[in-house]
Each structure stands twice: as C-alpha cells, then as structure tokens.
Length: 110
Length: 109
Image: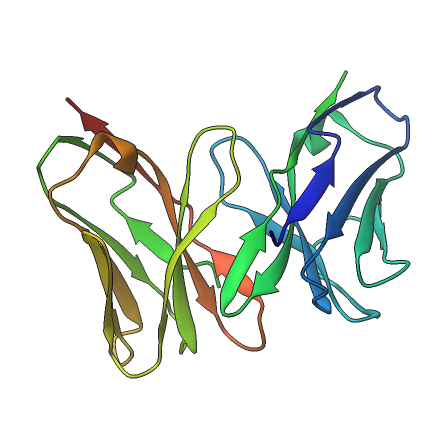
C-alpha cells in the first residue's frame, strides 16, 4: 500500500543540539513537502521539492535545512533547535489531487 | 494569504448538522478540505476546483463559490467519528497549499 513513512514518531532533543527528521515515500512522486505544525495551529509549509528542485518558503528560518538524496527519501535538519521549534513536523507528497501526509514526528526541545 | 475559517469551534450533538466556512482574499485555483484527529496527521476529505461544483463524501459535502472566493463544508447528521479539527487549504498556484487556522468540531453523544 502506498505510504509516507516518518521516523521517528517522537523525537526529544536538547536546546541547540542538531536533529534530523526523516521521511520516505513509496509513491515514487517527485513532489515532497515539509510542514511544521505547532500546537493548535495550522500546518505551515517550510519547504517543498519538485524532483530535485528545492523551494524554500520566504519565512522559513535559516536554522532549518532539507536534503533529498533521491526520489524516495527526504530529510529535515534543524541545526540549532530552540524551544520555539517544538512542534509536529509533517512530511507529505501528492496522491492524485490529494496532499498525502505521513504520520508526523513530534519534536520536543528540552 | 492564509484563508479565514469560521467558526473557530463548534459543539454538536450526534445527528445535528454543521457548516464550516473558508474564505480567501485571493483568487483561488482550488480548495481542499482535511480533517485532523488529535496527535494524528491531517486526512484528505475532498478537493473542489474552479467551477462552483459541489462534492460529497458520505454525509460530508462541500461547495466552492469561485466568484466570492469562498468554500463551505457541510456535515449532516453528524457522528461521533466526525470530531476533530477541520482545515481548509487554498491553492494559489502549483501544488502549494496554504491552510486556514482550523475549526474544532466536537460531536457529543
């Protein structure tokens, strides 16, 4: 079955300690997205890829980087996490007209 | 740029109906509706494209008024499973969605 898989489901990091979140998809689609969702807020787009063409949203902090080594995998790197970066991070691709999300990684920053 | 949703929250009893509205100040290519349960990812409900069509999905339907740049989600005879946060997402160009702030729906027995 077509899937978007995010690991880990829960991630705890320390203030300032780099962290990497991963995402893989079996749909073999060339579009991938990273959204940040803080508690009780809407998902907010951080980046998206069309194939290897990387698109950074204007208000995405420099602290956030992304890598996409191939069609199936995508990574979100947070170089120096702050307390304000605690959130659910959602990876998504498209399935027809639908934005199909992974189950997310809940990031806590201590 | 973010679409405006109303109401912010609604509480229903099972069997009651609800309407959730979504409006944009920009011309829209499409409107998406998603439902998110607590601690889970948003799940796609439906998409409405330019043309004012109305779509249905079981007892959940939606309309899109392109001229007014508005969409409404209709939930009829609500069930407990309808509880969650509903987001509309508006597409300005390409596949980039911008989500509204969400409407919390709680259905009580």
